[in-house]
Image (cartoon, rainbow, N blue to C red; front, side, top):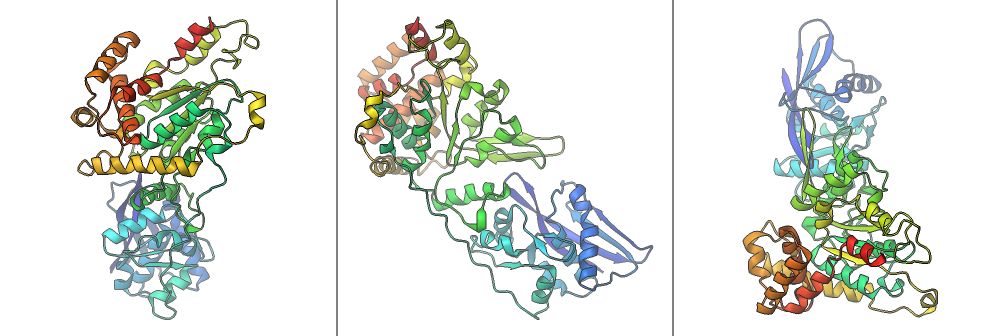
Length: 508
């Protein structure tokens, strides 16, 4: 008799259904797993056999064959233990065949039969709901998977508990969603003394998801400003929270099954490898740019990142997704993030200060910032100088608007964009607009058009730079609640595209 159970194999954030077929036939006693399993899946036979022995279940002296279908899909991970065990128990008529086939199961077995938490329960629950099946998983993963209310989630502590549930001896109540993580409100934009121009740039960046570069001497407040960007961003919508949480589920970042509505803030160190930033490594896990999906990616000391790592960001910034290619698989992860970068103006850090700068001014600044290629720099919409704050200013009372006040203006601007792009599913914010759509929503008036022509000739704007200025100007107009893009909006947008070379020339 051939029995079936169902589980999933992960391809990026997508969980593809896998049919686990079990056949117990006459022949020499053996236990084999076929269907392109990796090492962890192949070792499942030993974990399953030992766990069944701990339950005092004796396997028949026959040939046991487990087939993972489709056979040409690579199978990775230890979560295949539970569906293999359930299919085998159904084959030896301990479990009802129909009950096993009505669910998607995943979980790792310990040698005593306990179910160990695994990664990816949330995307697996989405697949189970699409296939109109229940989900069987370890108890620790139940609160996470239960956020998908379209499927019943049965979370057990051990294989014996799961057997007792399926045989009706001790039914398990469906799991309940974990608690929503409260957003961190401990930081406020008013904590930053001065830097009003940089705060204005943060507001524009948050309103339209425009990439931002802060450049200034050490201690001027670049990192402090970037850390307060999440406080002025609106909370994740339910759809965005699900997208982001599915990625975090694959990375094992959903503590206690809780899902947060706060936008993620990722700040990788400049020594991080390409696989850590972009994704890959063992199992082709999501990288920092995908973990920052729908949130903020803060790259401090941007010129210190390896050149190869920075260059790999160019395509994801444009497309909003990254494809991790391996010999046997291609993993696609979304990565629509807001990038905020910080950099010192030169190696010594004091290029604008003649009293403290090194003897290689201005060449040290040109050499240092040249680590960021022209195409990469062209993708940074806002480039802001952050001047040092005078010591006497630190004793002044807080100035400027609070994060809550700025967040209200950002939310109002994003509400305008939500209505604008309601008929354009591929665009959510002004940063996504391109081609004919951008021409329609950001067409400047006559004075603005003349200004753009003069600026393009004087500053040598590329076509990409020209379009990015239009997008920023459209966001500034939205913050002003203006239906049209006028000359002042374009002038402010152009003012934020300062080049590193101009600072070095002034220093000379």
